Image 1 (cartoon, rainbow, N blue to C red):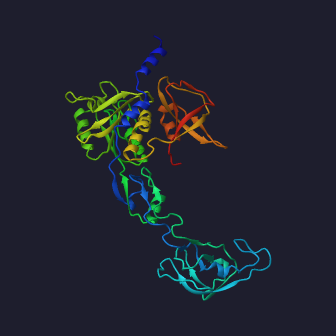
Image 2: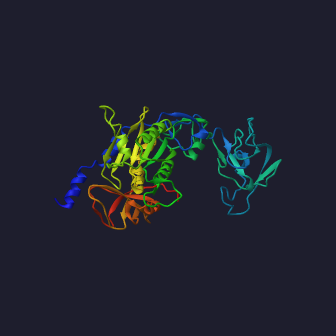
Length: 436
């Protein structure tokens, strides 16, 4: 059998990524809903639809500083040029109105306009009854007892009617929506003080391996700096999780079991990195895949058609059956594994929709090769083209390079059947939400 045939045979034994993801995500459920004060709701996902209990604006109000008047009283202020522009022929004829009072945003007593009168109003103040226009201050002589108006705005100018923007009963946001600062403003404006949300998942990250040492030093033979627990904690926080880095756990079976058991008390999801292989030193796999009596293993490890990092684990730990995702120890493979497995799991627990990153179709700027039978996720830079569409440039070094992942704003996705993608061809690209 040739080397190519050997590779194809091995690939045929792998679980397709889509099949594996489906089997994992079907086992997860969104966290139970929680009623939160509006000031704490930002960053969470709504657990139910939100409908406006009150209209916004709540009452007819002035939108600008000026004079609230009846349009019919001022419509003759300029025979030559009404509206927003200056008069084109002759001089405008001012109209004089009596100013019968001042209204501010804190005014609450209802008042009514009589013919030939107006009120001086501040932006946000309630409109007098019968007022249908607010004349900007700069279009007048700014009089106090009486005012002369030189230009005439259109009827309805300078005011906002009750419910003009959001009538009572308006659907403000659907379940699954992310609560942004602007949405908080909308909720507050319509009288909402509490919302029902899915809480942010509590995610614990554990790195395993006798060889690991903490950051702040360089690696040397027999020692490897713990990159993954720091990077994965940041990745979980980027998704919106409450991320907790436990740090390094040695390859001690009892210590590892005890650590994971302790973490189930504060975790909605545990992510481990390292030890997923089948070798004698791969302690995570040995400990978590051990059968309890005749029952099936609580965590199963699968060879998935994924490049980089084909071995992934998923199951539950502890009496509370907290979900656990087991990622490879190689940093590039761990970060890609997080993107394709851990990130969707966090999104699902949070009740977010959709659980996967957005993607676009883009024209490839450089020919790339890909392993047969594996779905590859390759760091790339994606850019919008003038006139529409996208281009994508694969970054140097392929998917294992941390520098490429650090520069990437997208991941080119090359399917299991793709061995070569030619420059100019169209490929799928996952968009990374880098804040740049």
